[in-house]
Length: 434
Image 1 (spheres, rainbow, N blue to C red):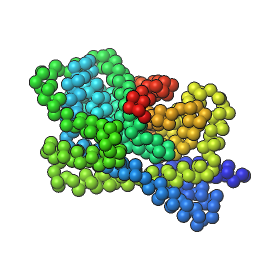
Image 2 (image 1 turned 30 degrees about the vertical axis):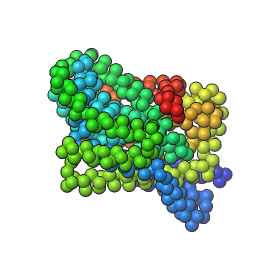
Image 3 (image 1 turned 90 degrees about the vertical axis):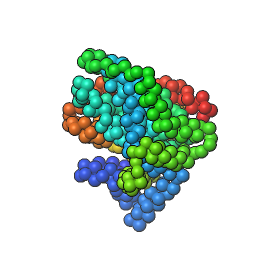
Image 4 (image 1 turned 180 degrees about the vertical axis):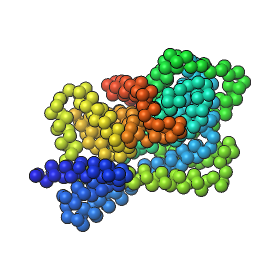
């Protein structure tokens, strides 16, 4: 067997084998990359090369933003911000038919955008909105479904850790430009989920929210302003050039810490626990990034990106067909792989194809990847947000899958629109000169 073909077979087979026997994803990625190196090199160069690639892959100033944004998210999750955002969302959309469904989506969009974490959104918003929706007569599986899908919208709306990861995987696409590009696609996804939720609520005759008196509404609005100001400070500072995305992440931590103390939801005795959670999450994310970078190098060494490119172009030279095939592959990948390794592994494979062969802007393709893989976060067997949403709602996954389907369709429709109409994604970045 040709050495290149042997390396590809070993890489794919070993990765699947490690996943099947229950090895965690980060270790499966690293072990499959190392196994492939052992086939291609001698033992000593294989181990030293893998260690070197993992270490140098983490030597990036941009990656410093990730632990800071994770810490900011942990502070927000403990600092009473979720409840204030929910009350703010009730003022804006709670009066519509099925208003609590709208509130769930909007609160997840706001909290996800501020925290940068879909898991934190599903947990924080779901734990508050679930009981409220149940009390109002909403079916629990519907409430869980809309919470799970809307929790992913914050990954497109900045600041977003996964957009920072994509910037690293793409070779340095501007983080600020990616942040700007995520606004319209993320908001469109939220609107699509609201439309589905509103239609379902109308059919089921779910109750309309109470009218909030002006004085109470103004009070709730003012209470939410300090939380919403973080978006203005972080994104406004980046766009205006006052600080980089990494510096903005540190400013976000300071602001969230001050806000948590002002709200009196966090005290000094809570900080060790919050920091420990941050360290654990950061360790998992960084290990995923390190092993995925090692795997990306192995794939490049084995000419896998070129092989995939030749294979796609041999099927069709039509850009629309190639984009459709890439989306289908990513949808399939998202079902079985977490978002961070998927971005790190498949960006080097597909980005050269779409940029050189199709002329697609790497900023636009980054948003396509994120919207695509968001769907995978809500699907079994590896959908982390689905598991968290079901756990918060105290439901089995099979109980939530059926009401999830209309929301999946809405997310796919938005993905198709964003894919084939790049001006939607690129409008805001171009407006700010990116």
